[in-house]
Length: 210
Image (tube, rainbow, N blue to C red; front, side):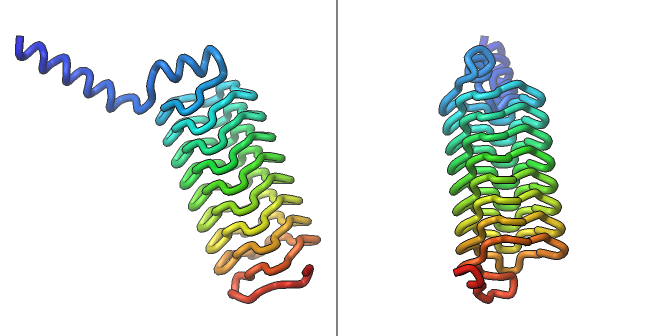
C-alpha cells in the first residue's frame, strides 16, 4: 500500500514538472477566449488563433506563441518573460505593463500595440514591427532591435540604454525624454524623429526639438 501511494505521488510530481500550466486554464482559454489571471506558463499555443482574447494578468512565462494571431488581445500586466512570440501577430494588442523580459518577438507584428510601461529588457526584437506603437516609459534596456520598424512609434521616456538598434527605422518616432546611453545606432534611420531632453548614446542631452 505504501509503495502504491509513493508511486501515485511520483506520477503527480512528474506531471507537475512536465506542464507548468493548469490544464483547466488552457481548456478555458480554448473554449471561451478568456483567461484572466490564469497560469499558462510553458503552454504550447504556437499558431493559435486568439484574436481579441482576454489574458489580463495571466502567467505566460516561457509559453510558445510563435506564429499565433493575437490581434487586439488584452495582455495588460501579463507575464510573458522568456516566451516565444516570434512571427506572432499582435496588431493593436494591449500589453500595457506586461513583462516581456528576455522574450523572443523577432519578426512579430506589434503595429499600433500599446506597450506603455512594459518591460522588454534583453528581449529579441529583431525585425519586429513597432510602427505607431505606444512604447512610452517602456524598459527596452539591452534589447535587440536590429532592423526593427519603429516608425512613428511613441518612445517618450523609454529606457533604451545599451539597446542594439543597428539599421533600425526610427523615422518620425517620438523620443522625448528617452534614455539612449550606450545604445548602438549604427546605420539607424532617424529622419524626422522628435528629440527633446533625449539622452544620446554618448550621455549628452539632445534638445533639438524642445
